[in-house]
Length: 187
Image (cartoon, rainbow, N blue to C red):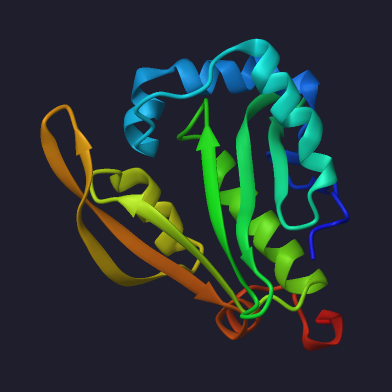
C-alpha cells in the first residue's frame, strides 16, 4: 500500500522519503530528553551507523511510509504511517519534531493524511499520545482525530504512571471535512 514513496509539498514543510542524509536530524531527535519523554522512548538506538542503516532501508518497505519533515533543506522531524493492517485497511501514524510549535506538525499530518486517503484504500488511521502531551493533543484534534479511549497507566516515566490517549480519523471524516480530497480522487 505504501510502495510509492512520494515527496509532498506544503507551504511550511516538504515531506521527503527518509534516507541516510537525514540521520543527523534523527540523531538530534532521539537524543533529546524532552522528545524521549514525549514519545515514551526510554532508550533508543542512537548510533549513527545503525540509524543510517534504518533510514536507508525504509524505501524497501511497502507496508509503511517514512517521510522526513523538512523546512527548506533543514530536517525538522519525521512523520510515519506504520503498523499497516491491510485486511482491515488501517494503520498507525506517528510524528516526531525536533522543532515543534511552528505549525510544521499540523501541516505534515495534513499532507500525509491527504496523501494516504487520496491514494490508498485506507479506512482508518490511529495514533496514541500521552495525556501530558497537551500540544500534540491540540494538534491531533485540530486536524480531525477523535479520541476513542484511554490506556490507563500505559507509560512509566521517572517513577510516575501516565495514560495514553488513543485517537483515530476515518476516511469519511477526512474526506468530508478536509478540502482538496474529493470522491473522484479516492481509490
